[in-house]
Length: 218
Image (cartoon, rainbow, N blue to C red; front, side):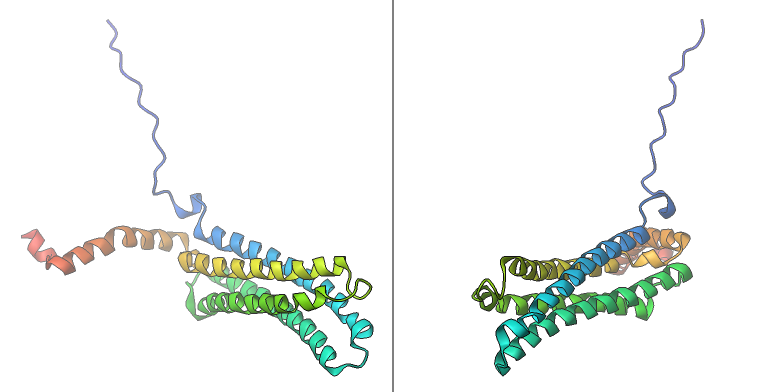
């Protein structure tokens, strides 16, 4: 009688696939950087259009009043400061990440400078948004012919996007810290991951309990 053999089960995919075959840390960094750039661009464009609306108040409201002139100038300067910071960060971080991704030499000082700039942008854009909110009531109390509803909605959109953009910088900083291996070659990243998974707990166990390789071999 013919001998029946059970067909082999399909081989399950390994959990330790090569980094290049999975969503690598490199891709995560670039995806979150792109998302941060899009949000920052939306904030910058909205702030630029809002700056034109505020600039028109010089002729409608100020009427030679120095205090009002300074207030309007402060609002324009605050928005412009946020836009300039977003533009400088986008240019600087893109150049650094692109060079690191091509060279694959590890994080280094410039990578850490980008991470630090992310934290700085979080606080800076939060400060910009809070400053704009502080003057929100003054603008609302202006007559309709001086400051319309559309201008007010645009003004509110600016500081809402400012908070969202600030949060995206904080998230980007965390992602860049977690995904520092994104700037290592795939083979080096795999070895580093294996060492982090197996070598470190083993060495911690040996250090804690005084077990050396010689004594374990004996």
